[in-house]
Amino acid sequence: MTSDYRFRASAPLTTDWQHFRFTKADGVATVTLDRPEKLNPLTFESYADLRDLLAELPHHQDVRALVIRGEGRGFCGGGDVNEIIGELLKMEPRDLMRFTKMTGDVIRAMRECPIPIITAIHGIAAGAGAVVALASDFRVVSASGRFAFLFTKVGLSGGDMGAAYLLPRVIGLGRATELLMLGGTIDATTADKYGLVSRLVADDEIGDAVAELAATLAAGPTLALAQTKSLLTRELDMSISSAMELDAMTQALLMTTKDHAEFHAAFNERRPPEWQGR
Image (cartoon, rainbow, N blue to C red):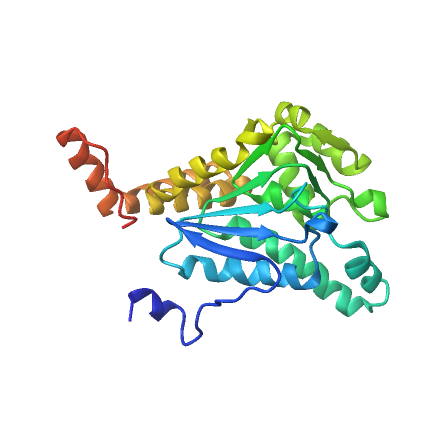
């Protein structure tokens, strides 16, 4: 029995995710949206699976980074028009609220998951797909990548799934207002200029670029990366005095870790640190 088991109670980790492909190798987990014939749309079931996977993932001791990608000619075309929108039109307010809260739970879980998340964007990232990319820590985008926050185009608020919270904080209020209110599509070069892109690469380089970044994160100081992500998320709405206090407490805690001591030893021995995530 590993020590991690004590934090999971009796429930085993899920081994069969039916609504996307899930693989693990060398510390990197990969979620592949795999309905390429429909541009990998999200459905009720895939939203629920993503929500539940993100809750489980911190208990996978062999996972230190997550990649989300799409199969075929694009990343994700958003919610399936007939499988979701068609069904939503038949629902009562109670169930509509359950659905909208579930989609928001996916985005909140992405931000609160201590594991760094990379999205690989080629082709279109539209609607919910654009928000999933937005909620990631890193967006590696190929030259064919495009973003479209399409919600007003279907008669809904552009602030879906936390987009009105996250997007202004990434690209500024003016650009976010344009994208969320008009629902237009921007190409990879424009998205890069706006600050929405972490790394812009050629179409045939995206696989290697994502793998390189994921390997760097997986080999890094796990606790330090997790706490940095947490601070970036939680300090968005804090006063500077509260943020400074949280920074101080976090840094003092990390100064007690084996990874911090390992850096000191490696520096004096003139070798790369061997991070343990402890």
